[in-house]
Structures are given as C-alpha cells and as structure tokens.
Length: 238
Image (cartoon, rainbow, N blue to C red; front, side, top):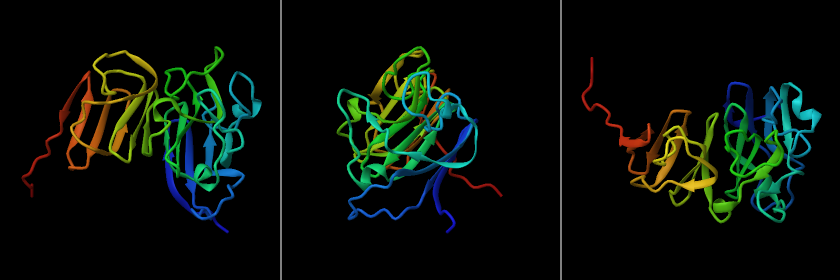
C-alpha cells in the first residue's frame, strides 16, 4: 500500500516525513520503528539512523536517497536513567522540525526527541566526545520532563517548543532571537521564555529572528535581543 504522509519538513541537507500508521490510543504495542522516514545527507547524524552517540556509526554517514524509517529501539533519556518506550504513544510521532544539522520529533505523549550535530547546543542536552554527535533519537528531559509539548520548531543554531498550557521554551545558541536578553548566550537545556504576553499556539525560529503566534492571534517577533508585536495593515488595497 502507498504511504500516507501526514506531515513533512525540509532543511538544507535532509527531509523528514511523518507517516500515518495504525496507531490507536488503545493499542499497547509499539511499532518497531518510529513513523518517521528521513532522507538526505547522513553525515553529522542528522538522519538519526546511527547506532548511538559519539564519533562512530558508519551507517549514519551514508546518504539516503529514499525515505528510510527511523528506528525507536535506541531512544534513551537525556538525564540519568533510561526512558523506556511506553507503548504506542512514545513511538507515534506527530510532528517534526529540522535544522540544518539536527532533527526534532514530537511524539503523542508530548515528549521531544532530538538527534544530529550538537555544535550549537541545539539538541537540548549535552553530548559526549569532541564530535558533538547524537546519531539516534534521544529524548530531551531536564526542564521538559513533565511538560506536555504540542509543537516544535528548529533552525541551524537553535530549537524551540511550546506546551499545551502555552508555555514556550528555547535552547541552543542565541543571536538575539530566542527570547533572552543576552545576545550570544548559549543554553544547553531548554529555557522558558517569560516575556511572551500570552499562550503560544505556533512558532517559527530562524538564525536571526523568531515569531510566535498567540492564542489571541497576535504575532510577536524576537530579533536583535528585543521583541515587538507585529502590526498588520487593516486597510485593503485594490
């Protein structure tokens, strides 16, 4: 049967597609693979097809010309102790976000997984070794451990997510666009942005600017270590 893609995202060097599966909240058995398929340049671990973190994993260095399933067997926690797959919710991905060298995946349990090159601390946890690689999916815990995340966004140098309660978190290397006052600051773990005047329901982040859509339908932009509301013209033009 043909695959049914329900979400997709693309960055400079790779593509990811979320595939509809036979997931049901009443089904306790998880699939052997995440319902995410990836293709593109594999160097740097951005495809999540390697065997673990570190500088090894030759398979992660290969180019993938066709969409290839990402396995869930190697998912681990980013803090001490394992984070086991707890049935279908954990292995069912509902959204993906791609930076140039890393990938974020949001599962149905509200947890965020990441993998790829951690050069800018954009994975949401510390990685071992000089290569700064995470070659397979790893859950971001830390401040997000008990959060119910509903959306993710990413760029080359940073990542972001927002929760069901409307809280907003960013991490990575700031160029003045992550909602912190310190331009050039680095946050390895997710950091809550407290300067947003409302509940966030959507966001996009770039290397120099970030925009968030609030429940009130206001749009706020973060740029150059400051933020402002975007005012759209109300008049119409012929």
